Amino acid sequence: MKLLHIDSSILGAYSASRELSAETVAQWIKNHPDTSVEYLDVAANQIPHFGADAIAIKGIAQPEPTEAQRAENALSEKLVSQFLAANVIVVGAPFYNFSIPTQLKAWIDRLAQPGRTFTYTDKGPTGLASGKTVIVVSTRGGAYSTSEAGQAMDHQESYLKTVFGFFGITDVRYVRAEGLAMGEAAKATAFAAARAEITAVTK
Image (cartoon, rainbow, N blue to C red; front, side):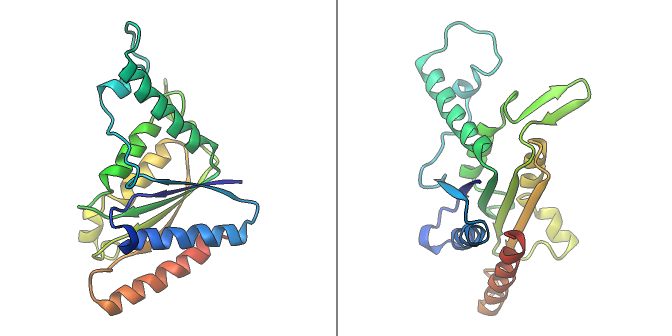
């Protein structure tokens, strides 16, 4: 079994999502000792944002690709191949401005490739990356899951569920720590709840 561990927080050693994603991976390995792990830190090793050179080769008739286009395509192919080779993906996803870090979005944009992770049919899009398990380690300074108003502002978990579903992945599990900026008591409660969820989602 192959596990791909993604971190995206810009906070380094101060990051709650990094701490909890590492604990999630460790618990998964404890429960599934045959697992090999590959690690990708998209904050420390930033992926260039998706631009014209990155999309130029993807199904667009054109003259011979430029060197820049070849380089962008090679990076996209490396990232999507790494993703497709994994059985389990653990994603550390902090909540930035109601959504995900731009560094994490850049990684996802490289994965969304027709013919690799999805295809269009006469009945609409079909995901090509089914059979995987994704564990999203979601951290938030405020509390968003417990009220309609909070849920309406949450474009983090909803986006990740949508995009992984678009790739054909239906087994998306969540470890959530929220209210981390609402005082020490709330933070301690959030970590305790998240660790209980880690135990549940890694069985």
